[in-house]
Amino acid sequence: MDIFEQVESEVRSYCRSFPAVFDKAEGCYIYGEDGTAYLDFFAGAGALNYGHNNPYITDKLIAYLKNNGILHALDMHTTAKRSFLEHFENSILKPRGLDYKVMFPAPTGTNAVESAFKLARKVKKRQTVFAFTGAFHGMTLGALAATSNSYNRDASGTALQGVTFMPFPYGFNKSFDTIAYMENVLTDDHSGSEIPAAVIVETVQAEGGIIPVDTEWLRRLRALCDKYGILLIVDDIQIGCGRTGDFFSFERAGIVPDMVTLSKSIGGCGLPMALLLLKPELDIWKPAEHNGTFRGNQLAFVAADAALDVLEKEDLLLHVRKAEAFLKDYIEKNILPLDPRITYRGRGLIYGIDFSALDPSGELAGKISKLCFKKNLIIERSGRNDTVLKILPPLVITEEELKKGLQIIESSAKEVLGK
Ligand SMILES: Cc1ncc(COP(=O)(O)O)c(C=O)c1O
Image (cartoon, rainbow, N blue to C red; front, side):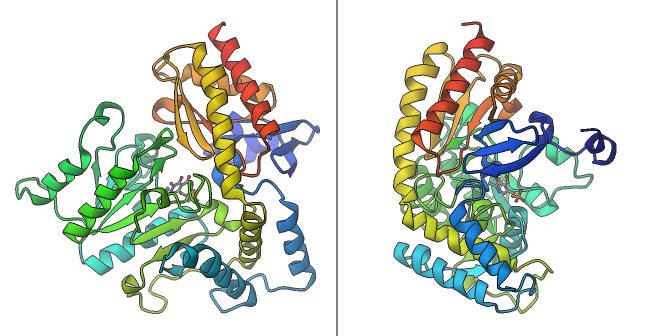
């Protein structure tokens, strides 16, 4: 362990919650170098929907490498990119009646958000973006301006500009009519706010504490954006690619965003890749106006293409819905009865168990997650003060594996609560 502490920056994070040296991984398990098998309920923060080293995907990668497939080609046309684009268009976009152009902004989620903001400002010739309290959109300055967490914002060292936060319907604002409030802000010439270029929303706030918004709220947000000529951006970086039981998280609301950001699991097996989906009429980019060296990760194209096969072959969206029913049933029967102040919420295979009413400091949830790790389960926390235990397994998880992880959460919570 010493080399990490000696050489690696203090900024390192997840390795502090899960202090082991990992070596191998397969499916829902990740193995320490001492051979300990950890059940993974974190899935690379949502980058591993298809599990670790999904054999179908890795076989395709190995075959591509053995065939001297090109690894770096800037954003030039390649067979790997063509195959992915055809597959994505024909299997994901067309069947859903979605007409989007695809932009490859750079490898990570925050790059997709940056490009969405840049394009929205360019199209609308307006400066401001509306984001929501509790939101998380990335760490680069433009995206960080729309990220609500003061811990991350304070580290920026400069003014974070161009974003106004609207109250997300949760906590203090739970029964507040945000949409009516936003309309008032847009129409009151004394509100102090300009009409924004765009509104960005996570339909389930993930880092914010696993907080889904209801479909009617999303439809009203879409209608509000239409009425005032504002672009609607859905950030599906963490909860897209099947996580909520639909490929896109907004499908359940029957809305069509103007732009969608995707990353994490779109890369198939944890390879960096990000997409910005944009309505064709917004595509006013001039060649190379938004450029970058790593906008064509060829291995990620191969993996992403193969991952769409897995999604179809294994009927993964149906599997997620069935697994969700099992998960909810287990939590309701075994974890909620531990204390009436424990609550839970989520969608598909992203669920949060909220201990904030028991301990708003987050210490208790921290103890539970630590104990889970001792019992070989990897589980993270999110929300204000990290009070919410975040269940985010690979989507390919079996009912048996799900049960095993839930039993570890239950026994750890019991121990920490002294039950
Ligand atoms: C909703 C959302 N948007 C953006 C990001 C940023 O993605 P990345 O960490 O790949 O830059 C994340 C990362 O967790 C996210 O959850």
